Length: 145
Length: 145
DNA sequence: ATTGCTGCAAACATTTTGCAATTAA
DNA sequence: TTAATTGCAAAATGTTTGCAGCAAT
View 1 (tube, rainbow over the protein chains, first blue to last red):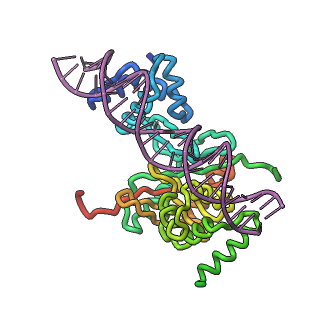
View 2: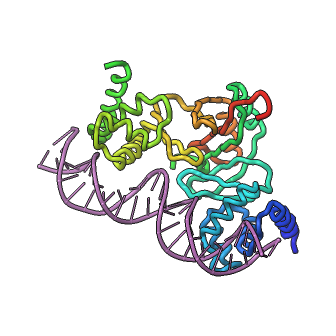
View 3: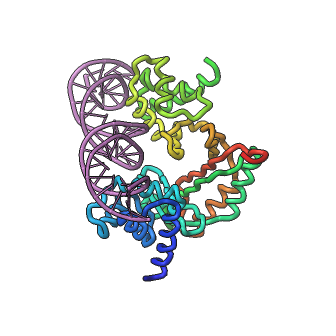
């Protein structure tokens, strides 16, 4: 009934057309992913989906995540030393800063960096399929810690 | 007794001073890593080390790699969908292009990108602990695949 | 009525760990 | 001598998969 639900509805129709069945489990996951403003991992998504669909299995979560990724609906991020984290692909492309102290993920975007990456690849006879830019950061401290 | 061996000797002394014992297994691994001009994974390093030290165990390889990484002697790279790959840290900092068709790793470096990363982090009140920039690329094809 | 999806349990791949024996220092 | 390191086997982690039944279309 909100704007988000309308978007999800449209997405749902698109998926169905692609031959993907929208089961209760998948509907719940789509909802949970649409709501998320963080970058949850599979287990956390499972936890959240269980509210809507008690008994949903972790395998189903993994399988659905794989399917949605294949459909380009979500992105999977493999940050250092952590299980994969997911976000819906509805946002424009961006890279990530990971606060190494808190695990927080901050999104950012630099067209200049993007352009330079493409240049570098082109210079060596390649084209970029996709890329990964992650800044592992720490809150700047005034003086010695 | 080539130049490389001299460098390894110096490294060996430094490690010993840090309380790290240089066993036959570790000497072999240091040698194997110094020789490598690719970015081998643990199992491959194990395979190569077995020539010098038959019977060396994979656990020892992993433990040694962890120890050498902690000493800053090697770098560990976790590229997408693949086991970790290692390289000695003796080279200057660089980023990586991974040929998605062949798995080949090409090193590159862009001071401008580095500078911009630092700027972006600083703007948001962070300092970079380390970063990861990987371009997943494909040989540019003249026309249709 | 199909055929894809589910839950379960078991398999998987990579990496880590406990322990008693060994070895570098 | 003695504390770090080894090999082995077992465990841990995160993810995938085979299968028989179930459910979306």
